[in-house]
Length: 209
Image (cartoon, rainbow, N blue to C red):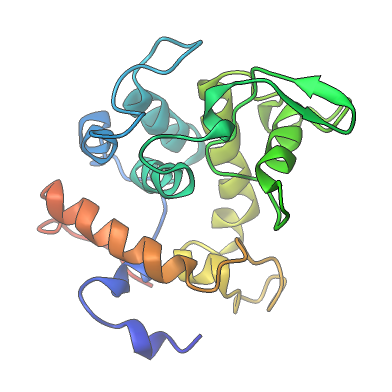
């Protein structure tokens, strides 16, 4: 938890403010997605993933670049069952056409990805409609997931990856922590650094907290 362990040129990115930045255009975001399953157009929407992440960030006042990095880390370069829309069975029912790029609701479990997709469905019966659920297209999943992160964390002062994991803010102190992986922010901070480096964004003003 001691932030002094991570004051170096790469890991300091866990303290990068994750608010919306106009300079993080869809073209900047595209460079994060090149070489992954999100390099082109999304299914159902038939629109560039880069545009969907940009719009999700702009609509919810959160960094679109961070959203793209997060999706890449959560789903890998080749994607997963949470991004394919493929059919799966859970609780004696079959579901299909669901997406969850940030694995929201996928708590630690042997089949946690299914729990994430049940959340994307709006619960087993599909009655929960908050955050634009059901997430039955990539655009709805990305925008709804961005809203979930922004409303639950960024707007409450947990506006860096560090604070999302280690909540030492006055709101819900020591609780309300994002992800179970204790090393999650360490890994993501290095990915953020290389993303900013590869896209030529290290030279501009950056705000760390």
